[in-house]
Length: 435
Ligand SMILES: [Mn+2]
Image (cartoon, rainbow, N blue to C red):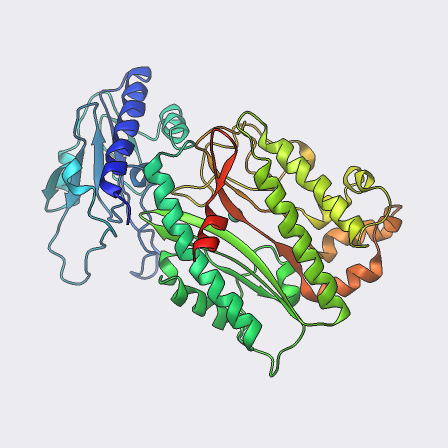
Protein backbone atom coordinates (compact mmCIF):
# COMPACT_ATOMS: atom_id res chain seq x y z
CA UNK A 1 0.00 0.00 0.00
CA UNK A 2 0.95 3.63 -0.42
CA UNK A 3 2.88 5.75 2.04
CA UNK A 4 -0.10 8.03 2.29
CA UNK A 5 1.36 9.96 5.24
CA UNK A 6 4.32 11.33 3.31
CA UNK A 7 2.11 12.23 0.34
CA UNK A 8 -0.38 13.90 2.66
CA UNK A 9 2.39 15.98 4.27
CA UNK A 10 3.43 17.24 0.85
CA UNK A 11 -0.22 17.92 -0.01
CA UNK A 12 -0.67 20.02 3.14
CA UNK A 13 2.57 21.86 2.45
CA UNK A 14 1.35 22.72 -1.07
CA UNK A 15 -2.04 23.80 0.23
CA UNK A 16 -0.41 25.83 3.00
CA UNK A 17 1.68 27.75 0.44
CA UNK A 18 -1.34 28.39 -1.75
CA UNK A 19 -3.47 29.59 1.14
CA UNK A 20 -0.70 31.84 2.56
CA UNK A 21 -0.56 33.56 -0.81
CA UNK A 22 -4.35 33.81 -0.84
CA UNK A 23 -4.38 35.36 2.66
CA UNK A 24 -1.82 37.95 1.59
CA UNK A 25 -3.55 38.77 -1.70
CA UNK A 26 -6.93 39.23 -0.05
CA UNK A 27 -5.53 40.89 3.08
CA UNK A 28 -6.97 38.29 5.41
CA UNK A 29 -5.71 37.06 8.78
CA UNK A 30 -7.52 33.73 8.49
CA UNK A 31 -9.82 31.63 6.35
CA UNK A 32 -12.35 29.35 7.98
CA UNK A 33 -13.41 26.30 5.99
CA UNK A 34 -16.71 25.00 7.33
CA UNK A 35 -17.64 21.35 6.80
CA UNK A 36 -21.31 22.42 6.82
CA UNK A 37 -24.35 20.43 7.82
CA UNK A 38 -26.35 17.69 6.16
CA UNK A 39 -29.11 19.11 3.97
CA UNK A 40 -32.65 18.29 5.12
CA UNK A 41 -34.56 16.03 2.74
CA UNK A 42 -37.75 17.91 3.46
CA UNK A 43 -38.81 20.66 5.82
CA UNK A 44 -41.68 18.41 6.89
CA UNK A 45 -39.66 15.64 8.56
CA UNK A 46 -36.38 15.11 10.36
CA UNK A 47 -34.53 13.12 7.68
CA UNK A 48 -31.35 14.55 6.15
CA UNK A 49 -29.22 13.72 3.14
CA UNK A 50 -25.84 12.25 4.08
CA UNK A 51 -23.16 14.77 4.98
CA UNK A 52 -21.24 16.12 2.01
CA UNK A 53 -18.55 18.38 3.36
CA UNK A 54 -17.79 21.66 1.65
CA UNK A 55 -15.28 20.93 -1.14
CA UNK A 56 -12.78 23.49 0.17
CA UNK A 57 -12.89 21.64 3.52
CA UNK A 58 -12.60 18.23 1.82
CA UNK A 59 -9.53 19.55 -0.01
CA UNK A 60 -7.79 19.83 3.37
CA UNK A 61 -8.88 16.62 5.07
CA UNK A 62 -11.01 13.53 4.47
CA UNK A 63 -13.18 13.90 7.57
CA UNK A 64 -16.87 13.41 6.63
CA UNK A 65 -18.10 15.17 9.74
CA UNK A 66 -20.69 17.98 9.99
CA UNK A 67 -20.14 21.15 12.03
CA UNK A 68 -16.35 20.92 11.84
CA UNK A 69 -14.17 23.91 10.92
CA UNK A 70 -10.63 24.15 9.60
CA UNK A 71 -8.91 27.44 10.39
CA UNK A 72 -6.04 28.41 8.14
CA UNK A 73 -4.08 31.42 9.33
CA UNK A 74 -0.67 30.79 7.84
CA UNK A 75 0.74 29.07 10.91
CA UNK A 76 2.45 25.71 10.57
CA UNK A 77 -0.37 23.58 11.95
CA UNK A 78 -3.93 24.39 10.86
CA UNK A 79 -6.60 24.18 13.58
CA UNK A 80 -9.51 21.77 13.40
CA UNK A 81 -12.55 22.54 15.53
CA UNK A 82 -14.95 19.63 16.05
CA UNK A 83 -18.25 19.32 17.81
CA UNK A 84 -18.88 16.25 19.97
CA UNK A 85 -22.32 16.49 21.55
CA UNK A 86 -22.21 13.00 23.01
CA UNK A 87 -25.10 12.03 20.72
CA UNK A 88 -26.08 8.39 21.32
CA UNK A 89 -28.50 8.10 18.39
CA UNK A 90 -25.94 8.00 15.60
CA UNK A 91 -22.46 6.64 15.19
CA UNK A 92 -20.02 9.34 14.19
CA UNK A 93 -18.96 9.32 10.53
CA UNK A 94 -15.42 8.03 10.22
CA UNK A 95 -12.68 8.92 7.83
CA UNK A 96 -11.35 5.94 5.89
CA UNK A 97 -7.81 6.91 6.83
CA UNK A 98 -6.60 8.40 10.09
CA UNK A 99 -3.59 9.94 8.37
CA UNK A 100 -4.60 13.55 8.97
CA UNK A 101 -5.28 13.77 12.73
CA UNK A 102 -1.84 14.64 14.03
CA UNK A 103 -1.27 17.24 11.32
CA UNK A 104 -3.94 19.44 12.92
CA UNK A 105 -4.30 21.17 16.24
CA UNK A 106 -7.62 19.60 17.20
CA UNK A 107 -10.04 21.45 19.46
CA UNK A 108 -13.16 19.54 20.49
CA UNK A 109 -16.18 21.44 21.83
CA UNK A 110 -19.64 20.35 23.05
CA UNK A 111 -21.88 22.24 20.64
CA UNK A 112 -21.99 24.40 17.54
CA UNK A 113 -22.25 27.63 19.56
CA UNK A 114 -18.99 26.81 21.29
CA UNK A 115 -17.40 26.05 17.91
CA UNK A 116 -18.57 29.40 16.55
CA UNK A 117 -17.25 31.15 19.67
CA UNK A 118 -13.84 29.60 19.01
CA UNK A 119 -13.62 30.96 15.45
CA UNK A 120 -11.30 33.90 14.80
CA UNK A 121 -12.74 37.38 14.19
CA UNK A 122 -11.47 40.36 12.29
CA UNK A 123 -10.11 40.08 8.77
CA UNK A 124 -11.59 36.62 8.33
CA UNK A 125 -13.44 34.91 5.49
CA UNK A 126 -15.42 31.69 5.76
CA UNK A 127 -16.20 29.23 2.97
CA UNK A 128 -19.16 26.93 3.52
CA UNK A 129 -22.90 26.42 3.31
CA UNK A 130 -25.56 25.76 5.94
CA UNK A 131 -23.31 27.43 8.50
CA UNK A 132 -24.25 29.94 11.18
CA UNK A 133 -23.81 33.64 10.54
CA UNK A 134 -20.77 34.81 12.42
CA UNK A 135 -20.41 38.50 13.20
CA UNK A 136 -17.27 39.93 11.71
CA UNK A 137 -16.69 36.98 9.34
CA UNK A 138 -17.37 37.39 5.60
CA UNK A 139 -19.20 34.34 4.27
CA UNK A 140 -18.14 33.12 0.82
CA UNK A 141 -16.61 36.31 -0.62
CA UNK A 142 -16.60 35.46 -4.37
CA UNK A 143 -12.95 36.44 -4.97
CA UNK A 144 -11.78 34.28 -2.06
CA UNK A 145 -13.92 31.33 -3.14
CA UNK A 146 -12.56 31.65 -6.69
CA UNK A 147 -8.97 31.78 -5.41
CA UNK A 148 -9.53 28.68 -3.24
CA UNK A 149 -11.08 26.87 -6.21
CA UNK A 150 -8.15 27.79 -8.42
CA UNK A 151 -5.92 25.89 -5.98
CA UNK A 152 -7.86 22.71 -6.80
CA UNK A 153 -7.20 22.48 -10.54
CA UNK A 154 -3.73 20.98 -10.27
CA UNK A 155 -3.62 17.87 -8.17
CA UNK A 156 -0.91 16.96 -5.70
CA UNK A 157 0.62 13.46 -5.67
CA UNK A 158 -1.61 12.69 -2.66
CA UNK A 159 -4.72 13.61 -4.62
CA UNK A 160 -3.62 11.55 -7.61
CA UNK A 161 -3.02 8.59 -5.29
CA UNK A 162 -6.54 8.99 -3.88
CA UNK A 163 -8.00 9.20 -7.39
CA UNK A 164 -6.01 6.11 -8.43
CA UNK A 165 -7.41 4.12 -5.48
CA UNK A 166 -10.94 5.35 -6.23
CA UNK A 167 -10.39 4.26 -9.84
CA UNK A 168 -9.20 0.80 -8.80
CA UNK A 169 -12.38 0.32 -6.77
CA UNK A 170 -14.61 1.48 -9.60
CA UNK A 171 -12.83 -0.80 -12.07
CA UNK A 172 -13.66 -3.81 -9.86
CA UNK A 173 -17.33 -2.86 -10.12
CA UNK A 174 -17.18 -2.38 -13.87
CA UNK A 175 -15.40 -5.66 -14.52
CA UNK A 176 -17.91 -7.51 -12.39
CA UNK A 177 -21.02 -6.15 -14.10
CA UNK A 178 -19.45 -6.76 -17.52
CA UNK A 179 -19.04 -10.45 -16.65
CA UNK A 180 -22.59 -10.65 -15.29
CA UNK A 181 -24.04 -9.02 -18.39
CA UNK A 182 -22.21 -11.43 -20.69
CA UNK A 183 -23.22 -14.53 -18.74
CA UNK A 184 -26.85 -14.12 -17.71
CA UNK A 185 -29.91 -11.90 -17.55
CA UNK A 186 -29.81 -9.30 -14.79
CA UNK A 187 -32.03 -6.23 -14.54
CA UNK A 188 -30.59 -2.70 -14.45
CA UNK A 189 -31.35 -2.57 -10.74
CA UNK A 190 -29.61 -5.91 -10.25
CA UNK A 191 -26.55 -4.68 -12.15
CA UNK A 192 -26.52 -1.45 -10.12
CA UNK A 193 -26.56 -3.41 -6.85
CA UNK A 194 -23.95 -5.85 -8.15
CA UNK A 195 -21.73 -2.91 -9.05
CA UNK A 196 -21.99 -1.49 -5.53
CA UNK A 197 -21.16 -4.87 -4.01
CA UNK A 198 -18.16 -5.48 -6.25
CA UNK A 199 -16.80 -1.98 -5.67
CA UNK A 200 -17.50 -2.33 -1.92
CA UNK A 201 -19.53 0.80 -1.36
CA UNK A 202 -22.92 1.85 -0.10
CA UNK A 203 -25.01 3.82 -2.57
CA UNK A 204 -24.68 7.00 -0.48
CA UNK A 205 -20.88 6.74 -0.63
CA UNK A 206 -20.78 6.75 -4.44
CA UNK A 207 -19.50 10.02 -5.94
CA UNK A 208 -22.64 10.26 -8.10
CA UNK A 209 -25.72 8.21 -8.88
CA UNK A 210 -24.71 5.25 -11.04
CA UNK A 211 -25.99 5.33 -14.60
CA UNK A 212 -26.93 1.77 -15.54
CA UNK A 213 -28.66 1.54 -18.89
CA UNK A 214 -29.54 -1.46 -21.00
CA UNK A 215 -30.65 -1.34 -24.60
CA UNK A 216 -32.42 1.82 -25.74
CA UNK A 217 -32.03 3.31 -22.24
CA UNK A 218 -28.36 3.88 -23.08
CA UNK A 219 -29.53 6.80 -25.27
CA UNK A 220 -30.67 8.59 -22.10
CA UNK A 221 -27.47 10.34 -21.08
CA UNK A 222 -28.24 10.20 -17.34
CA UNK A 223 -30.44 7.11 -17.07
CA UNK A 224 -30.87 6.38 -13.35
CA UNK A 225 -34.47 5.07 -13.35
CA UNK A 226 -33.35 1.45 -13.16
CA UNK A 227 -35.59 -1.13 -14.78
CA UNK A 228 -36.33 -3.95 -12.34
CA UNK A 229 -37.12 -6.54 -14.98
CA UNK A 230 -34.72 -8.90 -16.68
CA UNK A 231 -35.47 -10.75 -19.92
CA UNK A 232 -36.02 -14.52 -19.63
CA UNK A 233 -33.08 -15.46 -21.84
CA UNK A 234 -29.97 -13.86 -23.27
CA UNK A 235 -30.94 -11.44 -26.02
CA UNK A 236 -28.98 -9.12 -28.29
CA UNK A 237 -28.43 -6.19 -25.99
CA UNK A 238 -26.18 -3.36 -24.82
CA UNK A 239 -25.12 -2.19 -21.38
CA UNK A 240 -23.80 1.27 -20.55
CA UNK A 241 -22.51 1.76 -17.02
CA UNK A 242 -21.27 5.19 -15.89
CA UNK A 243 -20.26 4.67 -12.29
CA UNK A 244 -17.46 5.63 -9.94
CA UNK A 245 -16.16 5.11 -6.45
CA UNK A 246 -14.59 7.29 -3.79
CA UNK A 247 -11.48 7.24 -1.69
CA UNK A 248 -10.84 9.88 1.00
CA UNK A 249 -13.30 12.19 -0.71
CA UNK A 250 -11.88 11.83 -4.23
CA UNK A 251 -14.16 10.31 -6.85
CA UNK A 252 -13.49 8.30 -9.98
CA UNK A 253 -15.88 8.67 -12.94
CA UNK A 254 -15.74 5.80 -15.42
CA UNK A 255 -18.01 4.70 -18.26
CA UNK A 256 -17.94 1.46 -20.19
CA UNK A 257 -20.33 0.11 -22.80
CA UNK A 258 -20.78 -3.54 -23.68
CA UNK A 259 -22.52 -5.28 -26.54
CA UNK A 260 -23.99 -8.77 -26.63
CA UNK A 261 -25.43 -10.91 -29.39
CA UNK A 262 -24.74 -11.91 -33.00
CA UNK A 263 -27.60 -10.27 -34.91
CA UNK A 264 -26.93 -7.56 -37.50
CA UNK A 265 -27.81 -4.71 -35.13
CA UNK A 266 -25.71 -6.11 -32.29
CA UNK A 267 -22.80 -6.67 -34.65
CA UNK A 268 -22.92 -3.09 -35.95
CA UNK A 269 -23.30 -1.75 -32.41
CA UNK A 270 -20.33 -3.82 -31.19
CA UNK A 271 -18.26 -2.37 -34.04
CA UNK A 272 -19.33 1.14 -32.99
CA UNK A 273 -18.32 0.40 -29.39
CA UNK A 274 -14.90 -0.73 -30.64
CA UNK A 275 -14.50 2.40 -32.76
CA UNK A 276 -15.44 4.76 -29.91
CA UNK A 277 -13.08 2.85 -27.60
CA UNK A 278 -10.30 3.16 -30.15
CA UNK A 279 -10.81 6.87 -30.75
CA UNK A 280 -11.13 7.48 -27.01
CA UNK A 281 -7.67 5.96 -26.48
CA UNK A 282 -6.35 8.01 -29.37
CA UNK A 283 -7.64 11.19 -27.67
CA UNK A 284 -6.02 10.15 -24.37
CA UNK A 285 -2.71 9.74 -26.23
CA UNK A 286 -3.09 13.23 -27.73
CA UNK A 287 -3.37 15.01 -24.35
CA UNK A 288 -0.56 17.57 -24.19
CA UNK A 289 0.18 20.27 -21.65
CA UNK A 290 -0.18 23.64 -23.36
CA UNK A 291 -2.91 22.55 -25.76
CA UNK A 292 -6.52 23.70 -25.45
CA UNK A 293 -8.97 21.12 -24.08
CA UNK A 294 -11.64 22.51 -26.40
CA UNK A 295 -9.41 21.66 -29.38
CA UNK A 296 -9.34 18.06 -28.13
CA UNK A 297 -13.14 18.12 -27.96
CA UNK A 298 -13.20 19.35 -31.58
CA UNK A 299 -10.75 16.61 -32.50
CA UNK A 300 -13.14 14.04 -30.97
CA UNK A 301 -15.82 15.15 -33.42
CA UNK A 302 -13.48 14.66 -36.38
CA UNK A 303 -12.37 11.22 -35.19
CA UNK A 304 -16.01 10.23 -34.61
CA UNK A 305 -16.98 11.43 -38.10
CA UNK A 306 -14.25 9.29 -39.66
CA UNK A 307 -15.39 6.29 -37.61
CA UNK A 308 -19.02 6.80 -38.68
CA UNK A 309 -18.08 6.84 -42.36
CA UNK A 310 -15.85 3.81 -41.87
CA UNK A 311 -18.77 1.89 -40.34
CA UNK A 312 -21.24 3.01 -43.01
CA UNK A 313 -23.33 4.94 -40.47
CA UNK A 314 -22.25 8.30 -41.85
CA UNK A 315 -22.03 9.08 -45.56
CA UNK A 316 -19.77 11.29 -47.64
CA UNK A 317 -16.97 13.50 -46.43
CA UNK A 318 -16.30 13.14 -42.67
CA UNK A 319 -15.49 16.87 -42.44
CA UNK A 320 -19.03 17.65 -43.65
CA UNK A 321 -20.50 15.51 -40.87
CA UNK A 322 -18.77 17.78 -38.36
CA UNK A 323 -19.49 21.06 -40.17
CA UNK A 324 -23.18 20.28 -40.67
CA UNK A 325 -23.75 19.35 -37.01
CA UNK A 326 -24.31 15.63 -37.63
CA UNK A 327 -21.68 14.55 -35.11
CA UNK A 328 -23.13 17.00 -32.59
CA UNK A 329 -26.54 15.33 -32.89
CA UNK A 330 -24.92 11.94 -32.21
CA UNK A 331 -22.42 13.16 -29.57
CA UNK A 332 -24.19 16.04 -27.85
CA UNK A 333 -22.24 16.30 -24.59
CA UNK A 334 -18.77 17.58 -23.76
CA UNK A 335 -15.60 15.51 -24.03
CA UNK A 336 -14.96 15.76 -20.30
CA UNK A 337 -14.54 17.66 -17.09
CA UNK A 338 -12.20 18.23 -14.18
CA UNK A 339 -12.14 15.58 -11.46
CA UNK A 340 -11.37 15.84 -7.74
CA UNK A 341 -13.31 16.16 -4.49
CA UNK A 342 -16.27 16.97 -6.74
CA UNK A 343 -17.01 14.69 -9.64
CA UNK A 344 -17.48 17.74 -11.84
CA UNK A 345 -14.64 19.61 -10.24
CA UNK A 346 -14.08 23.33 -10.42
CA UNK A 347 -11.64 25.57 -12.15
CA UNK A 348 -11.56 24.28 -15.71
CA UNK A 349 -14.44 26.25 -17.19
CA UNK A 350 -13.19 29.76 -16.57
CA UNK A 351 -14.57 30.87 -19.93
CA UNK A 352 -17.64 29.58 -21.75
CA UNK A 353 -17.08 27.22 -24.69
CA UNK A 354 -17.99 28.12 -28.28
CA UNK A 355 -21.72 28.08 -28.91
CA UNK A 356 -21.58 24.75 -30.78
CA UNK A 357 -19.79 23.17 -27.79
CA UNK A 358 -22.19 24.56 -25.22
CA UNK A 359 -22.19 21.55 -22.86
CA UNK A 360 -18.38 21.41 -22.64
CA UNK A 361 -17.28 21.63 -18.99
CA UNK A 362 -13.58 22.07 -19.61
CA UNK A 363 -12.28 25.04 -21.61
CA UNK A 364 -8.91 25.23 -19.89
CA UNK A 365 -5.46 25.22 -21.37
CA UNK A 366 -4.23 21.74 -20.50
CA UNK A 367 -1.62 21.87 -17.71
CA UNK A 368 0.56 19.36 -15.88
CA UNK A 369 -1.18 17.81 -12.82
CA UNK A 370 -4.69 18.51 -14.06
CA UNK A 371 -6.96 15.47 -13.76
CA UNK A 372 -9.90 15.22 -16.11
CA UNK A 373 -12.11 12.77 -17.93
CA UNK A 374 -12.02 11.88 -21.62
CA UNK A 375 -15.49 10.57 -22.49
CA UNK A 376 -16.58 10.62 -26.11
CA UNK A 377 -19.92 9.03 -26.94
CA UNK A 378 -22.32 8.28 -29.78
CA UNK A 379 -26.06 7.81 -29.27
CA UNK A 380 -29.30 7.42 -31.17
CA UNK A 381 -31.29 10.25 -29.56
CA UNK A 382 -34.38 10.72 -31.68
CA UNK A 383 -35.08 14.24 -30.44
CA UNK A 384 -31.67 15.31 -31.81
CA UNK A 385 -31.76 13.23 -35.01
CA UNK A 386 -35.27 14.23 -36.13
CA UNK A 387 -34.17 17.67 -37.41
CA UNK A 388 -31.46 15.99 -39.54
CA UNK A 389 -33.95 13.55 -41.06
CA UNK A 390 -36.21 16.47 -41.93
CA UNK A 391 -33.73 18.76 -43.70
CA UNK A 392 -30.99 18.62 -46.33
CA UNK A 393 -28.69 16.72 -43.97
CA UNK A 394 -30.82 13.59 -44.44
CA UNK A 395 -28.35 12.08 -47.00
CA UNK A 396 -25.45 12.38 -44.52
CA UNK A 397 -26.63 9.42 -42.44
CA UNK A 398 -27.58 5.85 -43.32
CA UNK A 399 -30.99 5.71 -41.67
CA UNK A 400 -31.16 1.92 -41.92
CA UNK A 401 -28.01 1.76 -39.81
CA UNK A 402 -29.47 4.29 -37.36
CA UNK A 403 -32.60 2.13 -37.05
CA UNK A 404 -30.44 -0.95 -36.45
CA UNK A 405 -28.55 0.85 -33.68
CA UNK A 406 -31.61 2.38 -31.99
CA UNK A 407 -32.44 -0.64 -29.74
CA UNK A 408 -28.87 -0.47 -28.36
CA UNK A 409 -29.14 3.18 -27.31
CA UNK A 410 -25.60 4.40 -27.46
CA UNK A 411 -22.01 4.13 -26.38
CA UNK A 412 -19.81 6.17 -24.07
CA UNK A 413 -16.26 5.32 -23.00
CA UNK A 414 -14.82 7.38 -20.17
CA UNK A 415 -11.39 7.31 -18.56
CA UNK A 416 -9.73 9.49 -15.93
CA UNK A 417 -6.34 10.91 -16.93
CA UNK A 418 -3.61 12.87 -15.17
CA UNK A 419 -1.64 15.34 -17.30
CA UNK A 420 2.12 14.72 -17.11
CA UNK A 421 5.13 16.55 -18.55
CA UNK A 422 5.12 14.25 -21.59
CA UNK A 423 1.42 13.47 -22.09
CA UNK A 424 -1.06 11.81 -19.77
CA UNK A 425 -1.25 8.94 -17.34
CA UNK A 426 -4.48 7.00 -17.79
CA UNK A 427 -5.61 5.98 -14.29
CA UNK A 428 -8.51 3.93 -15.63
CA UNK A 429 -6.61 1.82 -18.17
CA UNK A 430 -3.78 1.33 -15.66
CA UNK A 431 -6.25 -0.01 -13.08
CA UNK A 432 -8.01 -2.13 -15.68
CA UNK A 433 -4.71 -3.69 -16.71
CA UNK A 434 -3.71 -4.34 -13.11
CA UNK A 435 -7.03 -5.79 -11.91
MN1 LIG B 1 -17.94 12.14 -16.44
